[in-house]
Image (tube, rainbow, N blue to C red):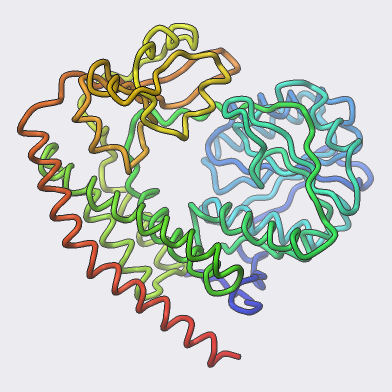
Length: 453
């Protein structure tokens, strides 16, 4: 089996020595001359979305100034052929297609394109994803016109009404990429963007680089359809502790402590929710996933081989919905009526105000009318049983002005309330020794780092 040959600098910044071994082919389609700007995106079995995205990018007024580079993460051949044939038939110029020999997921994809860019002669790179679309046809033009050797150009996500993250419509000078190094491919999925984002901000703080924000929008209408994906939960828990530990030990200690405390709070929420699911839903999968993730973090079992084994293991673990509820597609305007008087339980939905939705900030309304939250916000999951009705937002699709929701009703029973309290007590008892073990693991890692020096 292949394995990552990584070169660490101070155990934090990473380069990938054998990245080319994970590529089966690099194909240039309708390619002429070399450009100084590359636009990257990743794809896996999403041909329809890729074709739609390429069509939008090809209409940008600055299209002649940048290459489109696609990393195909070992998609099924039907998807690959559909994309290639569409590019050829429409005579879309200057496309480079990279094929991986295995599915190395998000961290691997991101590390591959990073290394590929560094091996070429580009001066700037724009990164996006195969299901994120420019709202206006000249978004890329505005980014290119604003480029500078010491600026990172960011845009705004319309769905969230916030600035782009590191991997969505952000432009980087290559000189900056050379400083920040690559995302760690060993993370596989989840937390790789947080890992890079933290290092990026660290570099910006200590150098002449800075952010410039373009007042233009992109949409990212990802639909999860209510499935609790245990494979993603595993990597989220394991990698979050791994990356937060490195922040704590390598960068700002004050910030690191705050971030680590937040991560312990999330762990407690996973435990509490896990026990709630056992009692209320007779489902122990989340709790089992949490324990496996913590174990692998503690023994530092974070490598390509274990990633593939865990992916196969959790892929077989059936994804299930949180409860037996109906998945609904509604117009964003109709959601306005559904949320009226309901308490905004989930502060991460504060951007909902930008779409002029009605909700309440009165805690009493939580018990009287119900609440609104995100479906997969784990710290809040047990609390839906204390409310007469809960509307959980899946995702906005601002392309079609739709929203995807779950609705829970009438689960506030005495039995469920007792289960929630019992789960809280058991989770607290279990949380204490796990916390001690994790702290010991972090201190040992610190000792190893000191000996390393």
